[in-house]
Amino acid sequence: MKKYIILIFCVLSTYCLKANKTPNIVLIYADDQGWMDTGYQTKGKFLTPTLDKMVKNGMTFTNAYTNAANCQPARACLLSGNYTARHHVFAVNSTNRGPKQKMRLIPAPNRDGLAVEDITIADALREKGYATGHFGKWHLYTKNGKGGGGALPSQQGFDVTYDSFGDGELPEGAKGNKPGPRSDPKGVFDLSKQACDFMEVNKDKPFFVYLAHHAPHGPVNSRNSTREKIKNPYEACVYDLDESVNRVLEKIKDLGIEKQTLIIYTSDNGGCVKTQKPLRGEKGMYYEGGIRVPMIALWPGVIGPGTVCEEPVMQIDLFPTYMELAKAKIEKELDGENLLPLLKQTGRLKRESIYWHMPGYLDRAKPGTRDKNFRTRPVSVIRKGGWKLHLYHEEWILDGGRKEIETNRAVELYNLDNDISEQNNVSLEKKAIRDELLDELLAWQKKVKAPMPSIK
Image (cartoon, rainbow, N blue to C red):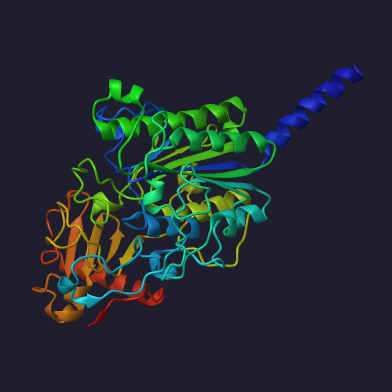
C-alpha cells in the first residue's frame, strides 16, 4: 500500500511541477512576409501548411501590426517594447534616403540600433531565470555606425546567438542576404535546427527563443526540391520557411512541452514581392500594406483552437505579455499592453488608439505611394477603432498646418471598416472625427517627445 501511495505522490508531484512551470516562449519572426503572403489568408494561393495548422489550432490576429514599415525600427520596437518615437530608430541606415532636392524638410536623426543600456525582452526574461537564445537576423548593430552603432545580441540579454550567415555578432546587411548552400539557401533549416538544439539543452528550465529568419526577404531562394513542385520563386521561398517552422513545432511536441510553450509567429513588416491587395502599399509605407502583418499564437490548453482576434494589436505588446507570463517587473515604461486577456479570451485591451511615427524619407516609390519620389515622406499615423489618420509633416509644417487643413493635403482619414484599401480619404467629410484623431495624435507626439523633421 505504501508503494502505491508513494507512486501516486510522485505522479502528482510531477504533474504539479509541470503545471506550475514558468511558460517557455518561442517567437518566430519572418522577414518581409506580408499580410497576404500565407495560405490561410489567400485561400491556398500560398502553400503554408504549418501556418494553416497553427491557425486551426491557435489564435489568428487579423489586425496585427508591426510598429514600423521596415525591418530595423520594427526589430527595435519589438525587443524594446517602445514606439520609434522613444528609441529613435526610424529606418535602415538613414532617414535621408532618396532625391535630396525633393525633400522639403530635414529629417530627424536616426539611430542605428538600441543602446546597450536599453532593456530588452531578453534582458528581462534572463533576470527571471530564462535561458535566452537568438537565432538569425539581428539588424540592430552597425560597426562604426554614425547613429550610435547599436548593440550586439550578447549585450542585450541573449545567452546564445547564432546566424547562418555569420557568427551572430555581426551586422547582416548584404552579407546576411547572400544565398547559402542549395540545400538551404536562406538558412531557414539551419536556424530552426539551432533553435531546436537550444530547446533540447534547456528543456528543463524556462527558455526564450527568438528565431528571426532572413526569409522571405530577397534575394528569393529555395531548395531545388521545392522549386520542382512550386514554380513561383517567392512562393517556394515561403514554403521552405513554413516547413522550417514545422520542424520547430515538432521538436516542441517531441520534448513534451507543448502545453508549457507559447509560440507566436509574425513578420517584421509588410510584403514587397507579391501584391498585398486589398491592402494599399507595401514595405516602407504606412498604408496597411506596409504595416499590417500575419500573426498567429499557439498554446494548447490556454489558447482555444481556431480562435480569431479582430482587436488591433502591435508587436510592442509582446514585451508586456511576456513579462506577465514570467511574473517579471522592469524599471522602464513600456508602450504596449499585455495580450493575455485576448489570448485567453477573458477580456479586451484598455487602450483605444495605436500610433506610428516616421520623421524621415524612404526612397524607391512603389505602387500605392502618394508621389513618384518616395515610398514614404515624414508621417505620423494614428488608428482608433476603425478610423486611421495619416499626418504628413511637410504639408503640416510648411503649408499652413491646421489653418489650411482643408486644402494642404496634410491629413488623410480612412474608415478601415469599409475601406481597408485606403482609397477614400474622408478628411473633409468627417471633420469631427478628423479633428479628434488629429488632436490625439499631436498630444501623443508631445507626450513621448517625438523627434520631428525641421525646416531647411
